[in-house]
Image 1: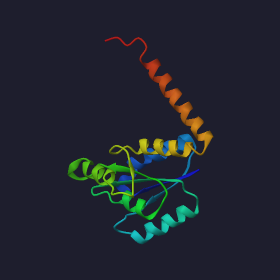
Image 2: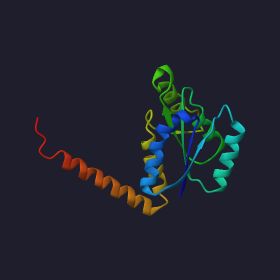
Image 3: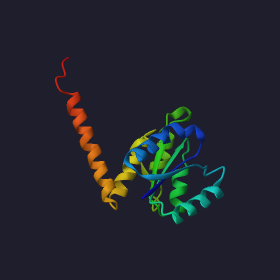
Image 4: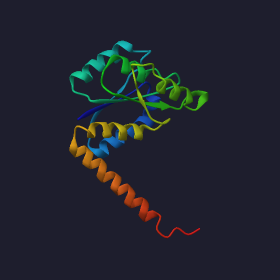
Length: 159
């Protein structure tokens, strides 16, 4: 199983690192790339061709402002794309969210909340888990642990 994380600027690293951390925790091989749909479109296309040849099965793409990167990637490949809108500029990420979620048919991009790189990786792992039972089992164990921690933390809550 293999995933890729692509984002348009080094200023997006902190948000996209959350996705990388989830992949590491769940044992998913991934590559990461800083590529811009506007500044280096030829390199983006070349990288997507390489990712396809390497067997990449899901891509997480983060972008702020007009947030064209996830949609451009989705238009150039059949690999599923999960978009992460990144807060930048004066609209707090709403512009990016709307740009990513409002893709015209038939070029969909799955979209998570603003700055939610972790959720993008969890969704990617769920997609990959359909094919890889061992990853599905790791996800199930993670969720069981999360539920147990929550239950333990809420024992005897007194206000």
